[in-house]
Length: 610
Image 1 (tube, rainbow, N blue to C red):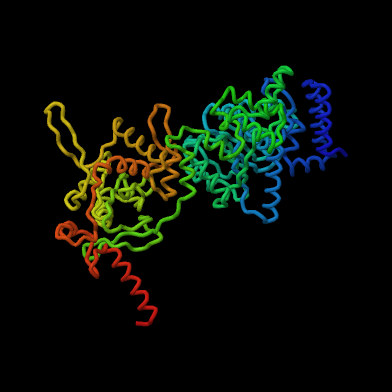
Image 2 (cartoon, one colour; image 1 turned 180 degrees about the vertical axis):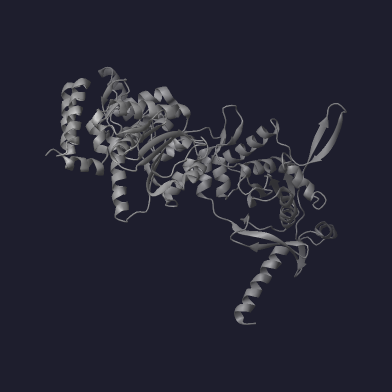
């Protein structure tokens, strides 16, 4: 009795000897006849347990030279398959609860071809199988179905082909087995319309508009034991990067899998002649440039061969700065190299290491004064409370207020450009102005507030202009009347946006921005230059970026030299009268400090039983 492995090994031996696709076709026909023979039930049971056997026994594929060859799994595909089988065993034994994989890869390593073939083999041999592939574009959707799945299926011997209900441009449906496999495009309104999906494959997921919305929409269709794979090359520091970071930290249910380019065996290149080989080896061992230093590291620490290094060098000459994205050596390299980030990502990664959570809470009005109340669900995050004698400046980016829309955001900066607090949440534009911004401004020493007037900002300004005096005003010049007038709020347009973004980029590059907010740094990392030269968030929101960029640009002109707060002269007394300071024990003290002390005393009295 021959096993599946016996049949596969024999097919490989025949191919290695002849490299004749006609001879291979003859062997496949004989192998299939052996499999479907009623006496050979053991072989069929093997294939049911390990559907990948059917791939190497009977499937063909078109290689990079456009030749039809047997579909034998390469090293990368075998490695990923081993991970899938290990996970399936763990799930069956109750050692894991999910079969969810994030695959970060280089170009043309064969993941889409393998996953497509694996789903097709499941559909051919299994009852009630429902597979679904989602591609990033219409062209790739057609390529996956026509060039990969349908081509493979059409080459199969007839005894392997189940009774078809559908075999069209986007779907195989095998009627008697009640099994199916479909392919669609991310963003299509039909995505996810199925009773159940027990195998999901997202191709080039980093290039989707929204991974979260798609996976949420698929949620009810995916079975508990479904295999879920999101595979992709990197596309900057976007939503897929967030998923990857969460997976590495164990903060979500995805398992991260990274595959270096050198795991693909055909990525080698012969030297043209001995002279070229000698010169290349000399340059690697005595690196004249930074790239050759990288080659030496790959030689010394990864054990790459000279032909692998020479192949990589050839790709470098073609791709230059795009090389790490297309053929990454590490996950970090692939993410940082891809996309067109507007800000210095390397500096931002340094900022990220030093981010710490602020104190969460909200401001309540007591006796006409704002009081900070700790609340772990609050929208106000505070890194440093207001200090006597300090000036503060607040930017405001206004959203619609819908719970599923953009966020309204108000960062607070001191005169040294340190982010000391940030309000961030969903709220109606008028309520954002009053009480949120009014209370926040009053708490931070009547800070100057620059509200972006665009869109819903005018509603916010109108809600606070009669209550709060220190609002930013811009000068507008009417060329017709030759008259200048002042208008409340900041206006972002094609002229002012580059100014504020360039200024923020400079502050980040020179490390003069003080920021402990992980939310803001991550938004800065995802802030990119588009094909038309405009700058926006690659995915998600950019409200912290925009609100900060506004206030950091305008605040310099409004910073004043304040008198020493310990000075008890009449001028100082008058200057701070009616502000957020009171005199206590002969010193001027900010109201929040007295409130904090009172809170502490109250806690002590309660503990003492008073």
